[in-house]
Length: 324
Image 1 (spheres, rainbow, N blue to C red):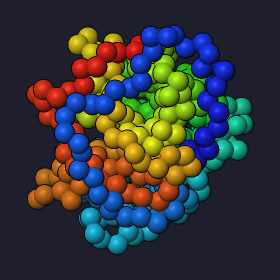
Image 2 (image 1 turned 45 degrees about the horizontal axis):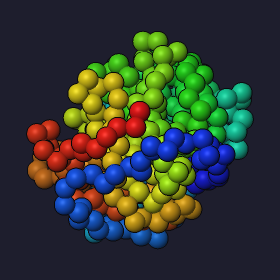
Image 3 (image 1 turned 90 degrees about the vertical axis):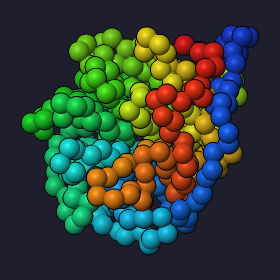
Image 4 (image 1 turned 45 degrees about the vertical axis):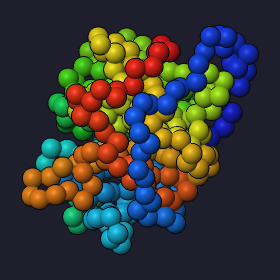
């Protein structure tokens, strides 16, 4: 979200002397290019089933059909939040993702979820009663989860559209993804020392720290939107740090190891808000392929990170020491 405040500055004096900053991911520097700029305040993004990049700006949903194409406004949504895609190609987008809603959202539940047709822009209310719908995650069983970075509620929406408000609690939860097995929900924390929490979907009281950084230089990283690849690696925008982090799973999968995939981006208030993986399509080459990542920023940029998603056998996976 476009609102980064002091993230527990008093905690700096309590950090252990052995803490280390998130190291750079191994491998050659990434090739990046700006696909669009001056797009306004961009909050979230996804590549749809037809290989098109969908992203949100203020109250407008845009579709970029290919690099170099002109972005098309396809829908108007009040304070759009996270976006996910269902198996049939329709999108689910959060509505009501505003700072004020977040502050009171754990008590008043003003946010909702909409279905969105990426071809026509048609929308329809899917569920109501969420705290903020800032980060939105889709499980393999069709269950949807929504977060509140200005509160602590993690809401669960069943396939019937019924919302279970406050199903779990993660303080300042933002980007969210479900693992491939459908067992865990990962939630990045924004207004806290940077960490990714893991929720057991079978028992939401079981919440552990999956990955974090305790270094003072990372304290205001401001973790934001997050995605994962098929190998279970997480990619998260660090808004306050002007960075993109990658988190590689440990051998047992219980913890993850963060590394710095890309730095040098604009910091808050113009920093990266969401990172999303491209998608391969059946009918020809995708304009936004799965080997690439795409980052949107609060400063209005859409940035391509070429060949940023390593293959499962890539030997250059981050092997730096964990901080969990």
